[in-house]
Length: 391
Ligand code: GLA
Image (tube, rainbow, N blue to C red; front, side, top):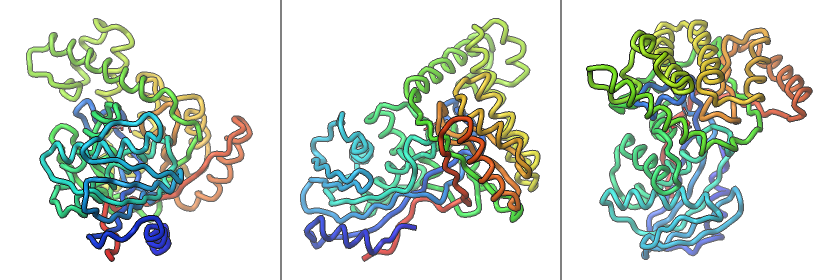
């Protein structure tokens, strides 16, 4: 937890007190346990919020100006709520502007604010840092302006900010879990209905461990959008072939897939197979966790990685290496890449007693082969976006 008093001190040094309402807010990053590239196919996902967060402090202003100081890069940006235009430099500010734009478009009235924020979520590591910045901004602006926006609606506003203002066609998973995560639970989200169920994830014998490959997700935006397009093509094909109503790959059964797959271009068939099988894995995984069966869940994680690597082709050599190394370690039940892919992190399910040996071995072996020092984070499922102490 970052030191709030120190942050308030900095805030007070940066900005003149406007005498209006102040507040401190936080939102967590996320790791996806299973259900990758299924959210934008109206499918199922099972992420959890992690113990890494962005803290934002804000005070309302009398005018429509926003002044933001980013403690990650030590940069200040000023803009007006009447003129929200995306920037080419300091693109982090686009996440804030995008959220404010979407809140206003949804019909809410905003006043300006002075803001500072600080993050301990590694960037471009597939741990949801962009979504978290959106969510903490949404919470800050709604609370300071005394608005009432339900968490699911807030997640949707944040997703739209990223789609419309930042220009990344992401699904809703990251924003959703950052808004609604809960301690000791993973979130089983139905990305069609936007309903969720809390799935207990707190067996004292097991631990989630995240390995950061330190490969930054370079290709991610263009390849991400390409995968979305490929899924659309597959959906169109099945819609044409089958008589019943097909809205998304979510609606295709494995049997239907098997009957028609040979008529699809090979690449499209593989993309569809990943999404269709991944949805089943999430459902089986949730079933296993409801019964406390971690080994079965872990096996599904391993299968998920294989499918992301071979069928969806969003892994990379370093992520595959981290998974292979992990699965050779004693006490490791499951390992897979997490997030959009092309770099970033793996998520591992490990017996608690073996964590120290795991950390030591992975660090040594990964460094020996790649020359890179990986980062390793141990985390419990954390709480979603929240108000910190008010002053
Ligand atoms: C990124 C997106 C999510 C989701 C994942 C892949 O994190 O923001 O919406 O599509 O990739 O599962």
